[in-house]
Each structure stands twice: as C-alpha cells, then as structure tokens.
Length: 257
Image 1 (cartoon, helix red, strand yellow):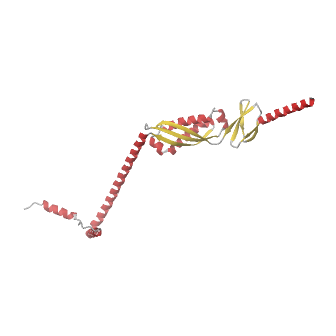
Image 2 (cartoon, rainbow, N blue to C red):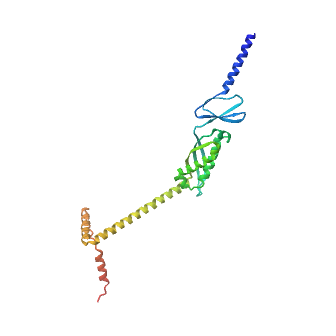
C-alpha cells in the first residue's frame, strides 16, 4: 500500500508540474507580440517565439501587428454648398506600439472606427460636392493625416484612407447632369467662336496678300470657277468686285444736271 501511495503522489506531482509548465509556456507568431503584466503592473513586451510566464503571477495579452481593414459605415454628410450626401470609406491601419494599444485605450478597433466616422463627417462637411467627386485623393490624404495624428496616442498607425462611395439623391443627379450638359454647350460655343476668330484672322491675312497684286485676285477668280465647273452644276456664280459696287454707288449719288 505504501508503494502505491508513493506512486500516486508522484503522479499527482508530475501532473501538477505539467499543468504549471503548460501554463507557463506561450508561443507567439511572427506577427504577434505579448503585453506582459506582473501582478497587474506592465513589465514588458514579449515575442515572437517561445516565452515563459510565471503562472498566476504574470498575465499576457496578445496583440496582432498586421494591417487591419476597417470599413467605415455610410455617413450622412452635408457639404459646404448644402448638398446632402451619403459617404462610405475604408481605413487601413496597424498597431505599432502594443503597450499603448493595450493600456491607453480599452478597444482600439471600436475607438478607431468611431473616430473615423466623426472625422469623415467633419472633413467632408468643409468641402463642396464638386470637390468630393473630383478631388478624392486630396480628401483621402487629409482624413488620413488627421486620423494618424489622433490615433498616435493609442499606438496606431493609419496607413491609408479611401473614400469608396459618394451617394447622391436622384434630384441632385439630374441637376448635375443639366449642369454638365450646359458646360459642354458652353465649351462648344467657345470652341466655335475661337474657330471663327482664327478663320477671320487667316482671311484677313489672305486679303492683305491678295491686295498687294491685283493679278492674284484674278487668278483666285479663275481657280474658283474651275472648282465650280468640276462640280457638274448648271449655275455659275461670278464674283462682283466691291470696287465696282462702290463706283456705281458714287455715280448714283451724284446729282443730275
């Protein structure tokens, strides 16, 4: 009986020792760090690899250092020109200081999400709708800088912010379409006017060249007649010199004796 009692006690001791060793040994992956607390006080960062803890004296919180993707829900934003839109975005961030992310904030994921929502509304509310649609890169950069500064105290690094959707109501879409159509018409008129201006300048230059030699004007008449004859038309127009018209007007205005 004494031998069996000794074996049972040894077995119990071995089992307790194995439990203590299992509780003391922790393995952290390459992208993980362990925030260690000894009797409730922060004592350091461990990992990656194999680490040993004193059971029931030291506790460890695992922190993932990989980049996280946070989807910001659609936010109702009133732009600077009083247009109501719904904007959604996505944020890429990671933990760079496990100590701060564990001690300084209770839930850094929730805190970053709420901060991103308020920052998105605040920044976009300072800009017009046209800027939201045409200058997303600049707005993304502005939001990223603000978030990065404010989350630095939590040990968070905001790497990138991307605005995904800017949803506009149907009435505003029709108004934008009318505006775009009017803009295209304006550009067409400006281009047409510029073409007329250039054509007038070229015609003036040609007239000055032809005015230097009367024979050049006659050759131009013959060239025009040649073009008309090749078009197989029965109607031929002869240019009437403006000098003759001036001469006839002067003759008609002279008083008869």
